[in-house]
Figure 1 (cartoon, rainbow, N blue to C red):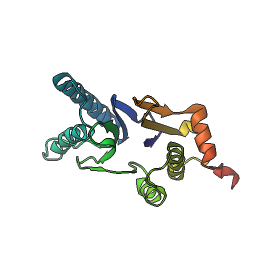
Figure 2: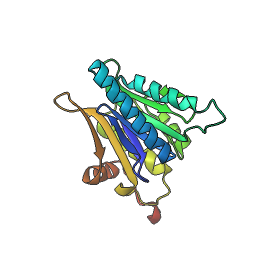
Figure 3: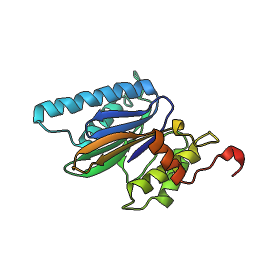
Figure 4: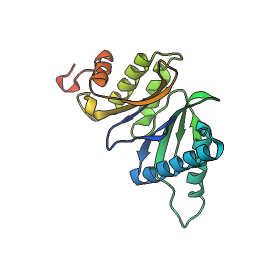
Length: 195
């Protein structure tokens, strides 16, 4: 599962099996997303199977890292979180920073107020959580890091990577009535009323 706040649409479908959230310079993110999409399609064309999630992450991070090595170019100013699924490692979550370092996580956050979010995730994340429990935890973590007084669905952008009832991989955005139900179930209140 994967979450990010909605400022200008920061969730991207990189491939049919990889969803990416970005924080930082959106123009840099757009370039890297397109670069990753091309690499994924080239791999699919050459090998007739989707690229492994970690291989695509490593490919992009190596590219990002090159730009930290020379004074004639500036590093990419974007942190990225990759949620994906492949037949070798199953579901995976990776975080990469602007320097090109990446790491694998069970639950993680990037961007503004990520230190507080990571602290909350460390205390509240439990292995084997249901999708509903995970969504409620994600909404609570995001609400704590927002500047808004009232948790409003328009302030969230939550993406999910999961297998459907037929075992097919699905990427979807949790929004509208479904997102409002998650917010209500999480017990979030209007902070402007002092509750």
